[in-house]
Length: 201
Image 1 (cartoon, rainbow, N blue to C red):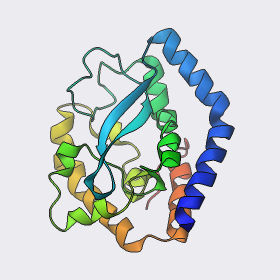
Image 2 (image 1 turned 90 degrees about the horizontal axis):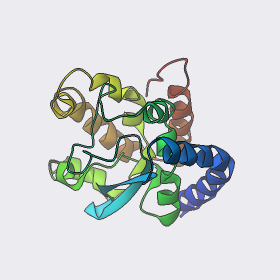
Image 3 (image 1 turned 45 degrees about the horizontal axis):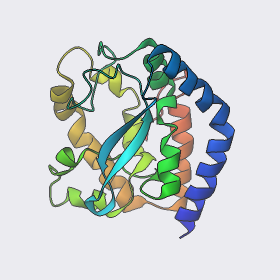
Image 4 (image 1 turned 90 degrees about the vertical axis):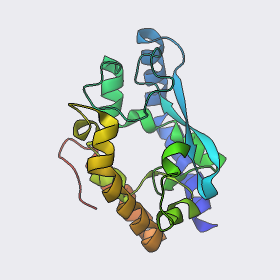
């Protein structure tokens, strides 16, 4: 209950504070890419329930349907505005509405597509016992994911270089979660997106 109250309070505050930026981002997308402004991706939530996660669109609309939700920084579908949004993480701001609705939390394991969540081992199923979040240990460790997935097949690189470490970090969060852990992750996430570099979990 306390976590949910914190999520609602901070997400509402975040929407108010970031509303000018979100308006500018929406206008930039509308002018340079047209509609839709938001990309709504199907993700596996708590107990495996599917929901639609909101993000500001960073790619050309054509060619995104049916494609992998992973992409490297060199993906030709990414627009100039989209590259800026990904670098600053502004593309994630609409997920504050997902938090208020209740299908996400500020902090929790980043959600996978239902198809990828179906790959979870029995041990990894514990990840689905909590609400997915905007950020977690794995988000900090792989804050430069676009760079890691560049230069080849992003899906292949994801499963070879990222999948297992991410699973371990997601399960680590479920085991250790607390109000103080959430605060630590929020502050480290802010540090990770600053130009100074990546923060270690």
